[in-house]
View (cartoon, rainbow, N blue to C red):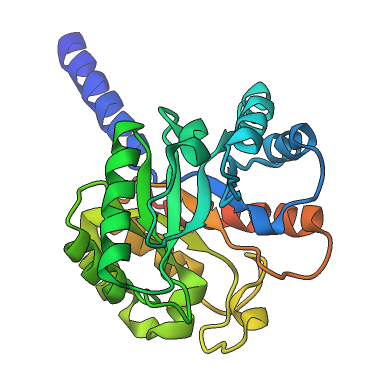
Length: 272
């Protein structure tokens, strides 16, 4: 009987461990556009203390000096600089501008305002350069641009035809340009080319950015629906928090959003 009990105990422990592993707990990064304007070390300290994995969508100058300075400050606090935010042109992104992301699991988020054969080729060359540095490149669909929707992003990805080029799903731009009912279908469409996601509080029928970009505890869009869709497709990438033009103290806003994020993850995983 002791042997049977031991086997049962081990089996139960393995099953429990497996269930625990299945919890969906993506890291949350704050977009630069919603952060307090303080020195890099203070910025990193705030994220560490509030529970963010770090910052995303920072701007990069041509030399990459500021990016390296931010990395140095962030690494002291054990948080990350995830991505830089750039626009595709006929000229490929220069290695010097993004080299700080190399070998750190970093990402280039790329808006595409116009599409020409030269732009397509420059994106291909950017993807090749970034691959050497172990940096992913994700198209960022943006309202008003040539790449404004997820299908448009996938069409360009097919034209560029490089495995290091993917797409970032952005809830506010999706709700602005596409139909909310198509959320799951759109995510399935991009499949393994989905490199990252951004979300924020939003009104499902919102038209203005004020209604489409709110703190995560606001808006009537069901965030749990997005998280369930990502979990179902076994998404393993990062999630960014869009903060553009949200009024009020960034510290208060980011703290409220992190509280809402933790509540959402608890709700999502409470059945595990």
